[in-house]
Image (cartoon, rainbow, N blue to C red; front, top):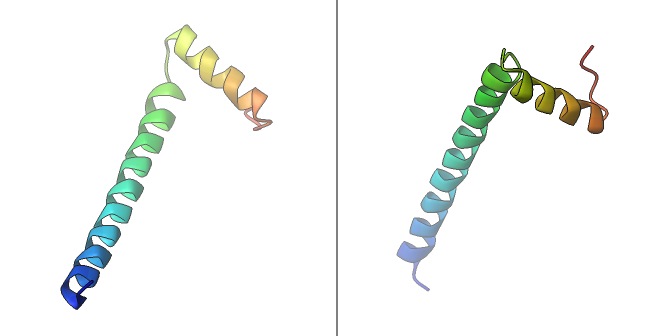
Length: 59
């Protein structure tokens, strides 16, 4: 293993970690924005039931 391959591996890892964090943040924003405030009863009730099953206070 050369120094160049070690350096390349580290930069790919940090870029990968950034992409994972960015996608997780976008998914969280989507879930909170769409599912949490949805006027579609089936979507809202599913999220509501999940919050209760995880003992998350929502009222």
